[in-house]
Length: 383
Image 1: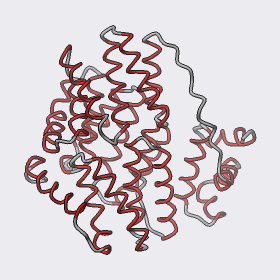
Image 2: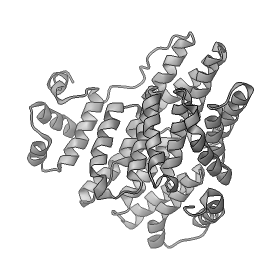
Image 3: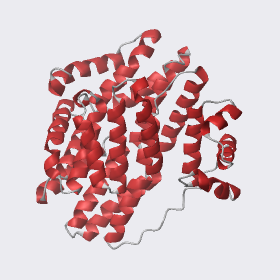
Image 4: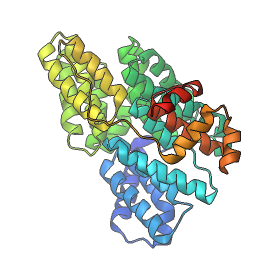
């Protein structure tokens, strides 16, 4: 793939995935190799293999007690849940991975946490996690880190409808010398195309669309071809655009990845409203809003709601999600932070690392919907 591109690599990768799926592998070998197999599934846009292999990796790591491997397997499993729209399962996998890494004294980059925050529409949390992760990326190695962080940044801005900022973040991926070799560069290409199409910078999307098309043709999966269709639709006009949007919906509906399907409904609805087809637009936007709201993709759901209102429909705020409650540990850390203690001081008092304190505070801020420590005393008094 590195030397010859997707077309040259796809047949060999497909044979490898077939072998992992059908041939018996000794557990001690499989537990070491399944991470690479899952990564190959992502490169091939093979959502079914990604789901099966990542689930097997987690179970096998549990069965053989491979605590050094399990956090990595759980993080990859979180990515599957995230794309399937099961954010609760993704959050559970992230939490377990973090707890195991902390208990075993190992370090786990919070990449899955960053992606989850971005898709949940928690821009403050996403930005804070990206800033903290970027500062420590040297210890984790160059590799995938910077590209994943900028991809998540682009997702977060696209969710908000801040397309100029999303375009800048996605362009940083294409400027990275490793971008053509890594999985997240293609996901960032999708974000770049959406941001460019919505910010009147479509001319900047040509190279990203070429790379996306190469990988989609090499893959041949409905996930790949559906993503390519809706990316190409955003850069097209008239009947061609509509045909491509409908193709994207048809293909993505046959996959396990529900977030791209919901986003395809969203961008199709936005396009229809731009064509003054308000009745048709509302149908697509309602579907997008319902799907994204149920998932917990608050940023994209609100973007759909804004479009629905612009198309002439009243949108009630969802009341189905109960206010999040703080755990006992979160409440304790929040109280100490509200009393003016720094993260190192809290860590020393509670016998934990400053990074663990920081992680719990991010969760406190998110659950309480606040953005600074100064807000803690008043909010906690009423919680």
